[in-house]
View 1 (tube, each protein chain N blue to C red):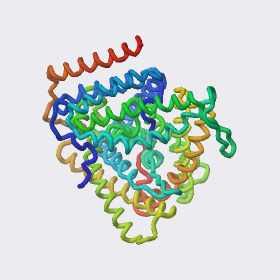
View 2 (view 1 turned 180 degrees about the horizontal axis):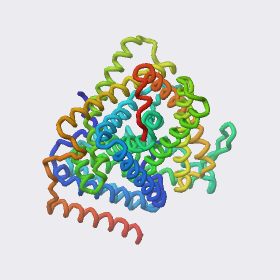
View 3 (view 1 turned 45 degrees about the vertical axis):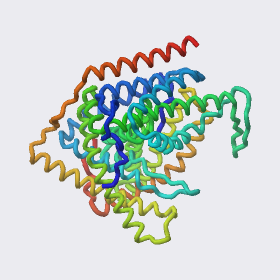
View 4 (view 1 turned 180 degrees about the vertical axis):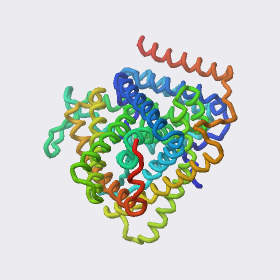
Length: 212
Length: 259
């Protein structure tokens, strides 16, 4: 889902760039206010954690493998603004170090995998939590649904950006992207559930951190 | 630690290596912007951009194989996104397929767009490889900070860079432990549960490490600001570099307009 350079037109690059820059600025402001200077080393190490977690591939059918994106996980554990900061930092580093995702496409990639995925996952998790009540089982179910939807929502945003840029008609790219990612999202959901259940059984207090 | 893959070759020496990171960041962004905004089908402009990047690669005195290897790693991911491109509705049909519910067709104009996009993506990728292979990540971060990227983000990125190596080691150890307990029985989808608990453990370890690091930083007087020695030097050579590359990029787009 990392959009490379050359796929988006100037209008999309500028719009998503401005929105993402605003999102990051606001996330930094909120983190500074609520967590103080404590958040700096923590966000850095957790960004390195997402980076390392993405190295853990799991086999999918046909010899391919997938890995977790992580936005939903961070949003569930630390809140949506933390997800925006951490995913932005990870995406900037991936673009610069691995050329995974373009430099000018960073705005779009941060918007899809940070803002859309992070906020989508967080609010779906919250909504499911109120619907299902406060139990460990409901946390796991909401975690799965939130993680699955975060991948789907991000892929829909990505499809719309590609279509608006004129690279592919929406009628082709939207069902294709959403269809593929509805499957990929299952992996993301299962992993997120497994992570949440490990955290629940070893350090349950981490599930009740102050979220930003 | 055995992962020099992050900014490999950035510790070498050449004219390009010695340039100020700010200049390189500005030129990289300008180059990619120029490539991205080139109208479709401007083959002459693509050729000229390629000559520019090839000349810079030659000046950097890095092995060409490094650039080829790195691009070959990333091109499949580009193709993954590009797979949807050639299915334009208009234009002469090059091939038509029935896929379950859809009847999709590949058109010549769609394929043209695909070639153009792939070339643009590849030129941009080469430029980014050149940037990271000639500039250490710390210097890139210093450059970004001076170019007014928010200080907090730069600090978070420098922490991330510092701990990537440690956590990567941690992941490799966990992988080794898993594989040694899982002789011959792997490659099944239910490994997903194992991966999940590994990531969970990794999260707890990372979080606790974060707490410890913060506590020891506060004990040493951390107040939210990082003070570093080693200032960047923006010399006349860097100004010249920006001026020359700027002129080249502008002339290429002008040439492209005329032809």
